[in-house]
Image (cartoon, rainbow, N blue to C red):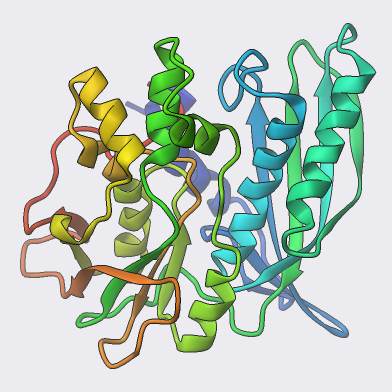
Length: 320
């Protein structure tokens, strides 16, 4: 199919990003451009990292599932986590809102309170934005922050170990429970409504010499796959090393599902995954879950689980 005949669903999220990147310029101020969790930009008096994310009602949140404050916290967390995944700390956010005319103003102030509550965890604040009319709620957030040593997705090397900080699978299990009309187990449902990114873990990993890093927003297999591709390596995860939360097991049992699938493909937990030299002592809060090896002849960069390439979806897909 010719490019001009393809829809965005045909191209997919990252194919679409690649098409846009081909048309994007650069300059000497761009130290790290598109394709990572955040860009790294130089200014006359220093540098900063910046990232943008978008949340759309009905796709990323539902008002019958979450309060305005919870939605504000989740929107902030998604963006603060991108800065965290670069080894940095967010300092300021700007927020753009598309709002239906009939929405109560108090809902928006509660949303703003949620933003401030989450931002306070890292010392950041909302410093501006924009508001416009829309048929559904749209929240666009740009986060900016500082990092001493930005960690990209492209530095993993054969022999490195793979480690995780934070919890995997809880938010995905919570989404599955809510989708079927359940409001429990509380730990899973709460994790979907308000994630708990390990904000201290990103800078800690950078200080310890992490070679690559990413946050888990779309699913562990999908996001670690970006590291494998960017680093041109094979990443082999070991299922016996995963800690499966009890709430995830509860949801899986109720739905007749494999609890490990929530850990491997569930998104929205905003845990961090990083690679470290095998000689490095993992920093506090980090747990080994796999290893990195070279790409063999005839092989492509990929992610394996116990030496086998998993079948089925690896995580969230925007157009299915």
